[in-house]
Image (tube, rainbow, N blue to C red):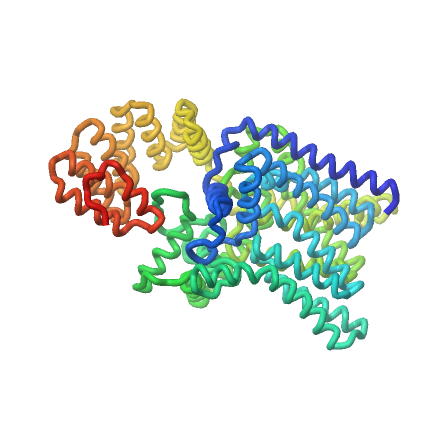
Length: 612
């Protein structure tokens, strides 16, 4: 590497990091900053438990553990510093930009590497997801490193190189297990190339074994944890079965991670998919002692049964998901990147001028050019990794968050596409230039339209999320403003009506809160939390009979609603019916999750009741 290239790399890293720091400072002024929700809150809650010394969970891992453990170690050392957490993640992301540079350099040349590095530095999904407390950003570094090291092992199949490949795959797997789908492909490819070099079969087996053992060493602690915590064999995490079902069932649209029933939580935040998967599997199988592996197998078998019984419908769904995967729109999973861009000029600019339609289409065309013109082992391995990763996402469900790592593979190919077209222009190869430009235009034109209506009709759910952030920060006026904006866009939005009522209640406007909850329940009579909140309003207005009626309605709809049952016990006490209140209290205590029992036992409203 000469001095000129070293200088370019320094400027590339600093430029990528500077852009990310600007983005980070912009986001510190957004409502999202310091108010994690959904998956971010899940990771933060788990990390706080780890930081407090709870290294072993109460059950096998539902999600892959690497990110939460890294975050937990960070919190143990530095505390919960949202700015520093994101800054370190952006450092990781800027390092990923350099890794993409070296991947493009190894497969193509220094010219493509420079273009790929600049594209990666400016890629909006990269720095957006690096700024979230989610695990996916780890793959922005792991994937190019895995490919670089795999290619090194092709050239120099030393023990060291094979160990490093296995180590990197293991790390990637305990962050996102779908990399494991690539392992047999890689081993077969290695074997094919090494045999062409006339390497002995015993040498091949030894190299495979070294890489495989290195990978197992990294994965094994998660497997041991899962056996100790859940008394079951779960190699990494148990979410595969239910996620496979979510993406492969008669009601799947291919991109929405929905479950059949709304779940309710009391105490710490939980994963709603995990709670639904266990509860529904237990209900259907008539057992409450299911292990995590049994729950996962139940959902995987249910999805496979539907696939085998409906092969044409499933094939159509897979084609739909594949088309969605290559579509331009960045599908929301937790946060809508287009709504978040309201708070970041940098994000708006790069979303507009470097969209997936352009990068993805250029990458696909670059792969075509590379296979047609220079089908080297490096190009073939890049293509195989690209196909494998795409399949690993499409088999489940497609969102921008899970699609983003494929850009680490497409960006080097996109750089090759650009240099190929440029060279064709300079050399007068008009057929290549014209054909390439037409193909690129067609691919972009196909990917831009919203063929499957993945784009939401409006930003109502995003205003609701922002309202939740402001409510978390106790900024009730702004929370109310955003809930009302959500309702302006969607007057029938149940969650926005409920949360507006909660804000009005917190502001002490009980009458307005009561009317809001009544309006909610007129529109959505099965909204359980609304009945509980209606009961709270009636109780504070000393209308105890109607409060009792509301609580009982909530419990008819959802008997496991602990908060509604405790509120019912309280209102029964206020009506002079202590025996009935005690029965409801005991029911709540006996049906509550173990983690919630201490809070119920210490509830001062029921201090007079004897404790078990």
